[in-house]
Image 1 (cartoon, rainbow, N blue to C red):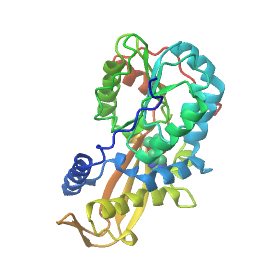
Image 2: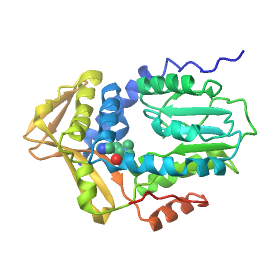
Image 3: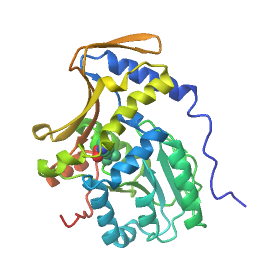
Length: 313
Ligand code: AVJ
């Protein structure tokens, strides 16, 4: 008998991952506009904080995504077809996964890729209980770097990438096209992509989603510094930095920063990083799209739009 769940490779959070993390942090903090890639938000604590963001009244994205899936998952499953290999980018807690899997007909393989190991393990355990005959191949990896898939044993099955959580918005337009092209290569001719984009909308809706009253988003942002302290022997004083999120309409994105409240010096793995008062670390972009910009982006990456679904708002 073949095992239903492949073991999650144990070697990857190791030295290579830590070394890359260190390199990205040091390189990013040496730039004129300091920056840290947002994929590093998702350690164990950051993943829990992100799940809390998804429950916030102000955070409309998850509710909209879930509404779209609840109403349209059957039609999505029909378009995907029978016997697919489903590859999910950044599977997170797996709620959106379950809604689609429940409608898919005889999927051959479900292959989630996520940087958050504990989250990946937990969601795969839950999926194994709920869908006992599904072949699960979890991959703990960064999907931006991940190009080669493990052998799924179904070379002829249709490959479909599932990327529903508006995470494409973390990529600037050039990087988004690169990623969408990589997905096209990964699924091959005839493959599919089911992807979520957050539409641009009034500032009175977007701003609060990234500046929630209970401060969960601020805690999520600041956890990045706490993680760097924990994993890279750094000395960030979390009380000396403030969360800032602004909707920059002309740039079509929300920019998220951590602002240094005062002049200060921080040590990161033996190096010294100086901050002036008010200087920031840019930690995330969240692009908001028009239907036109979605059409342009996907067409530029070689995709043909088959169907799109909107939520009721
Ligand atoms: C997971 C990328 C969709 O951009 O809205 C939420 C991440 N950052 N609050 C987003 C996030 C701050 C989120 N995505």
